[in-house]
Length: 484
Image (cartoon, rainbow, N blue to C red; front, side):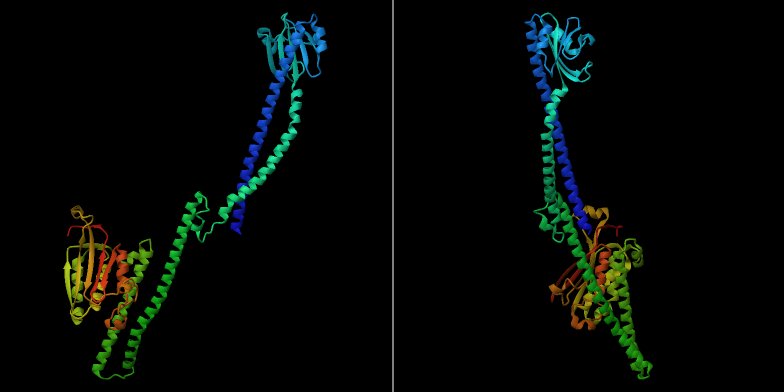
């Protein structure tokens, strides 16, 4: 409903604007035409009056009696006045000359005395109306003056008012029709815009609309992307819920089963009790690891969404971390695990430091290393390396204390198929599903690596090939660090 009102209002506004401009144009044109016609009538009347004045003057100059000649020349619409050299009125066709004041100071009379002829357009002090005057000096020095009132030429102008009014009315009607048609034509491209596919309107749209259509298309694509992200997040949430339920249910069932056997006195042999206790302990440890990983991921997720820094505080304080020392500690902690898997751990570390949360950096490297051992083969090698990368290919960066640290974990294991490489950082995703339980782990290690790297502004690079092993490197951003 609101959209229809908006369209109707816009159409009316365009129509009103166009009609107003048309009416203003018509009115201005009518006024200009009227003024032009008035001027032409005044000029024409003045020329006729001047011609008559010259004829009257010629007749008077050839007549022995001015007054007698003037009486014969008298016209209904023309006033004739004879003014003596001293300014006294000698004769007037409309008023008794004895009642008239001195006319020597009249503009047209003064001009005629000086130059031989004169004219003016003014209000008559005698008759009280606007008159056109033409005066001509006679041979004896007196002046004859002819005058016509404005009513004479205005009557002609008024006679043209009807046709002008008709033309104006026709112009108004035409303007209304044209304004209505043009306003509809102007609004039509706006009404035809397909907001679901803005780019389809590019050819028919106005140039001024293109930026708006581009913004709509950009926002539409962004909304589609957000919908896909939300749908993907919802799918991942459901999968995560299903996976976490399964992962929690399995060890809980095991613990519950063993505990029930012990509680019911069905296990009496001391060796069996120790074995059951060991299994319960292992499953409890697996549960603890799973819960810890879930908490870590939850905190990382919250930190990524939070803008106030409160969630980040739960992850720990950032501080300079000696990466080689961290990798060395991880190698020692995983030494027995590697020996049981018949895998050798090698260190290839150069000085490197990262400003970050020690616990997260440790978990990041630990998960990469434990995965490299878990998915290796007997007699395989896991290489833990670190260092700094030159930025811009100049020694100046190193001298100024700016470094781009990296951590790399490479193995000679089973490798990852190309179609699987984009999925390994998903939660609970395992490359070798057939032996995932035997290999252990919670399935959240690489997901923690991904989010921990993102939390520190780092990028992850993966290089893997089936049967040849895998190399995962984490490249941290350039940062200012103290000298090592």
